[in-house]
Amino acid sequence: MVSFLEFEKPIAELEARIVDLRATASVGDINIDGEIATLEQRAAKLLADTYAKLTPWQKTQVARHPDRPHFKDYVAGLFDNFMPLAGDRAFADDQAILGGFATLGERKVMVIGHEKGDDTASRVRHNFGKAIRLMELADRFGLPVVTLVDTSGAFPGVQAEERGQAEAIARSTEACLKLGVPMVAAVVGEGGSGGAIALAAANRVLMFEHAVYSVISPEGCASILWRTADKASDAATAMQVTAQHLKGLGVIDRIVAEPVGGAHREPVEAIANLGAAIEAELESLGSMDADALRTDRADKFLAIGA
Image (cartoon, rainbow, N blue to C red; front, side):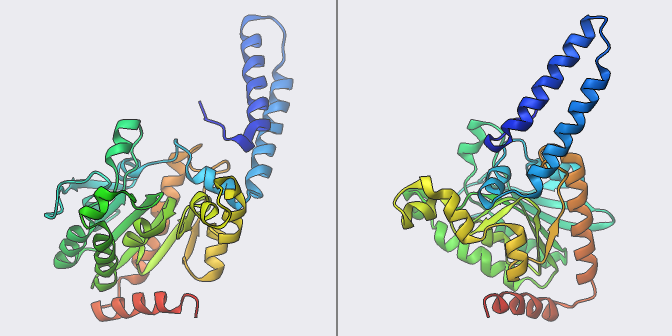
């Protein structure tokens, strides 16, 4: 069952009517197939029309949908021979970042990503972790790096600062920029603050159609500017957090299409779309040597806002 968002209530009502009619048809002799088909067409059109004109705040809600694919789903759907690697040799193994050797198509890669978790217990564990070591390992073995970004932002608590989180984010960003191998990052849900850029300072940055990417959450921005999180919708619009805005600003390089109604409705299709886009970008970077890749990466980020 799909979990409907607040702005999807009219769609939910139609879907509920369809379910009720199907239940009625299954126990009676009345033929209502025509009425069911009409309602299905209306629901499909309403879904397509709704998602064709989402506001930035609505896209933020879609990006946060609990049923969107997680890192483990992308690994299962896109990569073969995944060999997870643990530990950062700095504090302890942190489940916020998962990664390891894998095969994408015919290409061996290092895949790294945020894992939000799919239940309360796992979400508590997932804060920020070990990307630097994995990127350095990829560089040593000449493997392209693929990162999957999905985080609301770095954990702002005292414990994180005590363990050097700010420096870890800065060093992770530096590690991205220093890589002598191709790097492709994909924002698949939320791309929040330093927790995102630490994995997204790549040669090519891709972004799902309904993902969001910003320096602060809309609620955080609203709390600073208006002293209330109730203005989050206004903040999302002002910050231009959507893939469409960011492509125009040169912050990202490619928008990856999602199935109608978002990646959470057809995760297999969404994952396949992302895989094709990543492979295409890796292919385009394959002929560049280490110096050219570093220069390309530096030029890309220095040009933003110029």
